[in-house]
Image (cartoon, rainbow, N blue to C red):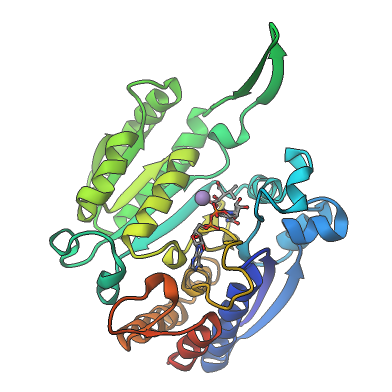
Length: 361
Ligand code: NAD
Ligand code: IPM
Ligand code: MN
């Protein structure tokens, strides 16, 4: 099979971690008789430097022409990078939001899994993590505060800023259905997270999720308020199977969930629409504090590449091979600095990519 993959290396650690994911993809392709046909695309700061904008319409068209896009992360240090002297709509993050909207990538899947081998990197007590945990955060990605009306103006002599949060029932229904479909293939539990004690959008969210739930009688559903969810994630992460939530809550809760798995450098992500197309990227950012040092953890990006094989190409065996290679390397005791613990061997970004690649069977 020829895999037509768009590649957005991005900014900061982006190029370092994407290089390792491509290395692993090439190895899997070689072992299983596929070819990877990469199209390099520019987005974020790298696109601003060349085109003056974080994402051009040509790049969107090129991305659409691919079967899937693999991405690093975009953005820079807000204090020092010249990108942040531009108006907000021209900054790196605007490119990311634009591509999500343009490709209708409404379903963001972020699997937070505590590998048995990584218990030492997890900040929670052992009795809490005993047996590990495995949850899927389903984050709505093209609505809510991220895409609402925004305005900064002076009202009665006082500077005032507004961001608005809107959801319609169709937007909620399609992500809820996707969440329940995924739960059916997992442990059949959905925790729908909202702030229905305050927000109208959350009350509608809850109503629509309850309607959708009727079509999935085998799935246990519970509603949880987002503040409680933030607390439950560290108190008892094992209780979660699928967490279904809106855009901003999902952004925040997924970073929290990543840390209980050991590091943001472990959290993969897939952003999907109604077709087979997907954008695959680590959930974390461009980590300007460690960029260029060769120490970033490439595993989230490598696991995102595995998600790409699974969701966009139906190559389950190949995806399994990547996941097994990651588990093997962790079992052998190799760690990047973010997941390092006593008695393990610390290695850099490139060595981690090499080892995972060598372990592909
Ligand atoms: P960040 O995720 O980049 O970094 C937070 C912390 O996690 C840092 O200490 C960083 O070193 C560490 N970290 C992140 N990824 C790591 C990895 N793979 N290995 C080891 N350590 C890792 O978040 P931030 O500092 O708040 O944001 C930096 C920039 O990234 C901002 O411009 C932000 O907008 C952007 N960002 C982009 C994306 C994306 O492209 N999807 C996601 C989040 C943030
Ligand atoms: C993420 C990031 C983005 C988001 C930023 C960079 C716009 O934090 O993918 O989680 O908030 O969605
Ligand atoms: Mn985020």
